[in-house]
Structure formats: C-alpha cells, structure tokens
Length: 297
Image (cartoon, rainbow, N blue to C red; front, side, top):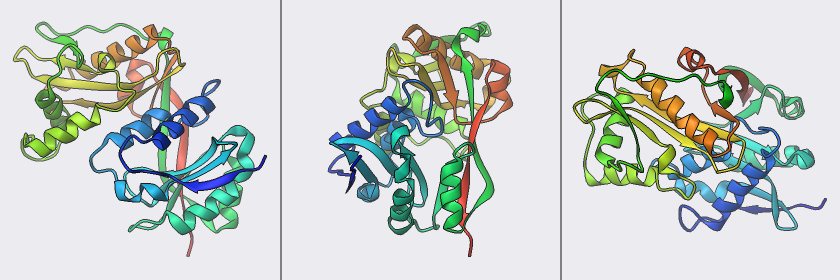
C-alpha cells in the first residue's frame, strides 16, 4: 500500500477536499463508529462556523492511496488541537502523520494531540516522542434510538423544525442565551450571516434541527443534529436552552424529537461529545473518551 501525502486544498469553505474528507469519515464509520470523537458531523460543523481558522486550512494533511483518502491530520477551530485519523487498514501511517503534525500544526497556544483511550498504538508512538497524557478529556455518550422514551411539553409550548420555521433571529437568540454570554444577542448583519452559514453546510437537514417555542413565540430550546439518511449514526450538536426556561424538560424534548427523526431516516444510534447528567437522564450512556496529550519539556 503506497500512499501519497498532500496538503488540503481550500479556495472556499466547502471545497472538493472538504467533501473527500467528509466521505472518508463516513466510510470508515460505516460498520462501527471508529472515530466517535471526530465524526463527519464535527468536521462539517467546524467548517460551518465563522470563527474557524480558514487561513490555516492548507495545514491539514491528507494521505491518499490511489486517490482515496486513507488518513488525515486535522485541527478544529484553530491550529494546535490535532486529531490523527486513519483508515483501519492504514494504521501504519500514524508515525508519519505525527511527524507531520508536530512540525506543521502547532498553534499560538502550542500543540495538543487528541488520542482515544483505546488507541494504544498511537499512545505508544506519542510516548516515544515524549508526549504525556493530561487530565483534559473529551468524553462521548451514546444511546440506542430504539430505547428512547417519549417527552411531554408544558402547556402552551410547541416543537418546530428550522425547516418549518426558518427564523435566523430566533435561532441566534436561543444559541446566544443558551451559552450564557453577558448581554443580549447581537442582531447585526455580520452575526446573522454567521448563523446562516452555520446551518448552510451541504449535509444540513433543517427538518432535524429542532426548536421548542414558548407561548410568547421565542425559541427557548434548540437541538442541532447531523445525520445522513440510511447511515447508522447521528450526532447531537449543538444543544442550548434559554436560562429562563431551564428545568422544564424543554431541552430533553428537543433532543428526543431530533433523535427520533434521525431514527426514522435510518439511524440506529445517536452520539454526543459530552458526559453530562442531562444526557444520562434521557437515556444516554458513557461510550468512550479522548485524552489530550502534550509533549513534556
């Protein structure tokens, strides 16, 4: 298996290389979720966000065999936090990929490598380079969709998808308030343009993006979902609830409704990149975790 290395090509946001990496992530996860910490939905969500470091996209490394991607070295919003992802038949590339990443993917805050707790091969290679695990982790949780229970909304509240009500100002408002920044949500053109962009990726299905509407008409809880019809896995990202409406079961309702819609489209499991009681009360269970490794001095 002779592989060729090249850099990611990015002359716009959703390039041919974006699609190739998206297809690679879907393909290697068809039978089992090999990259639970970095599924296709995370890749697309990253590329959809305005704060993503577009000027460094060419630093992403791609390894191909006969034109088919078999390995990638990627970062998320900015250089420094790195994932090395390989086709299961090409794990021998991991050392070469790490060599590339530690030279080319260092950010302003340094370099961290995300390694799954079950990837003992990459752990051993990283240790040879004097990397050590930290106490910073990214846990994942999952649920079998067939095990989902139902939900009930308080009187006067309703469920709506962004396909049914494409209201960017309300979408912006619930995400802003849900993540608790100070002040009121900005509604300037640049902010709203960024929100539109975040739900404009090639695989976004607005029918799966669910909001709970309060009696006053505001979106007060929201669940975004990433799923491709007939594939087994769906990713929950992001989830937000207005602080004034918490402890009412609204976030639970949004998540359950979104996941059930994925189930109707063929998904068997839903994953979220968190380990929280909120999800455990819905029925999620701990699945796996990635640990951040850094080079010791």
